[in-house]
Image 1 (cartoon, rainbow, N blue to C red):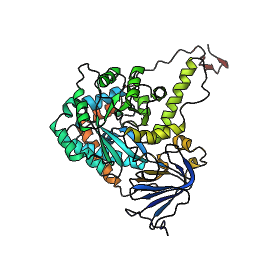
Image 2: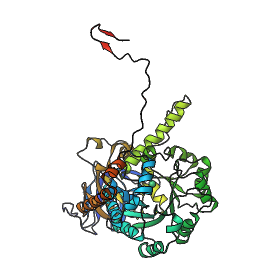
Image 3: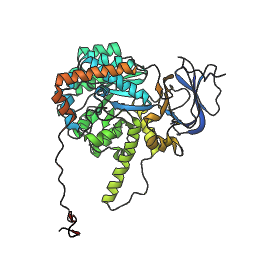
Image 4: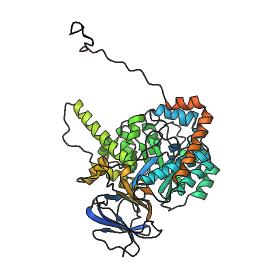
Length: 486
Ligand SMILES: [Zn+2]
């Protein structure tokens, strides 16, 4: 007998998702209506219809819901979540001034911890079971320890992408402190906490970043880099990487939005992938979200949310906005040629693939996660909300995930076999403590900057808008003559 009536999950207890619409995201994209997913230990034991419940299994009624693999975000600056929403009206210019030039160095290790902790909790709550922490605020190894401490305090799957915008990568990546950190905190083969090097290539012909690439090669860890960012990185950086032999299948190119075909050819030829942050590219100005170009080069795509200083850690948003941006560009280009797009290239199914398998492949984790298949590690998300009118009818499940569902509909989440969210509530997470940490960081930043600078930083000037002369405007109605005044 199953014991689905018991309210509290017990560690090690099998979990059986019962009678949901299962998007396996296997290679054939098998969709199973009215199916079950059985989790035993850390792994998926079985996916199918009418599975027998093992003794002691916790059954979760998935009827009316969609069961899918956990989503994967391949680029998020999690430390910045401590300033959630602060930069909603920024462009990249304000972002660079704030973090790189003026105030980013105010972050202490405890502030990195606070941001990471809240971001990590947000991820698992939203069904993002793997998140790359593009952690470029690691001014000291103590900051890096704090980043990892936070990631290890939350039962999600993470990749620490180590970076430091306060130094050149040739400085920090070759420092004894960095090497000591790697020896202490990075454990090869740990699929709960992976490791990458995170730095950008400016295109300086002297190619000083070469030293950091050599460290990555020696450590045999991937590099993730903001590439093709308008005004910051460009084709020169890609060319230098390529000529140096540093472009590999594990390299992740973030944005890759302002590049010429030559760079895309080099990325495609060396097997790397692009992490597309559509909401970021649209608002901040890295360049137009590049998926409409990437398909012509057959370059693999994963999705990311970049930073919660503008946006949330919500891959539903990433899927939705990526579909919109890609289709918008296709229509716009066609209209410029006096043509009509009658069939969209980018499908909802494709963005669900990018949010799952796209990420697992980009991170070298595809043998472990990314799909619901027996034997894989169990990262499972149930999207179900019986109180939402938007969860019925479910006719096109991929379209439903991309355009109808939202993170409030994430009902239950299993990561590495462990139930971390159940019936819309996180399990065993101290959100109040995370909130207190973030509050302390905000108070520290406000007092260090001063109230005026804090307020000014959040409210950049608005350029003047010139309202055009309108030849059709006859604005005044003369009530006395009951006529328009000319
Ligand atoms: Zn970024």
